[in-house]
Image (cartoon, rainbow, N blue to C red; front, side, top):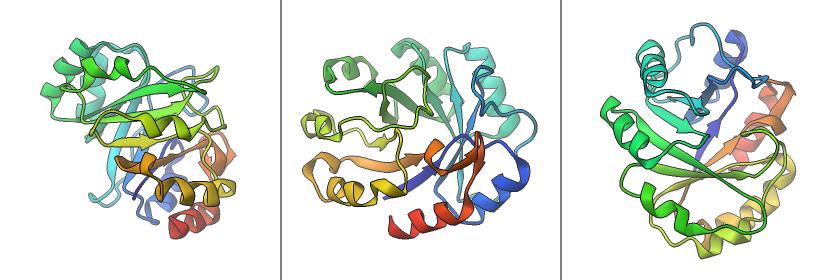
Length: 204
């Protein structure tokens, strides 16, 4: 199971998290987020994929950030259309399209995105487009009709270790590609607790 740590913000903290060698580090390019990233991403091993997180940005803006930061994947958290995803595929960045879930979900909305995305990401429906700090009902994913690999996100922390173990051993996780963590491992918005991340990664 892969690990993505999202909402990175501070240079020293980015380097410290990178030393744990997660598979993905996420950088949020959304001004309204307390984890909005500005500046230059420091050097870290190329084995760690840089993911840019965007909410209803233009193709031009996203393409510029891909070029500037050498992003290997982009995570689309807004109302981006399948056609927009198709255009963005020409950047050669992997496309992760986010869908929010609470207690139920209409999986038919995934169909138009099947051909134009590399991964789906399932997050908790909340007031903010991510970083809300609580989980959705993972049992919903038992009915996942696709073979597209997905990221599991939304309020995942150390207290979910046992629940996560049950999920990973269940049929619902068959196409779960990665676990995405953020706010539950923070000292403050954008500043991650290294020891807790280390413990979680080891348990994963």
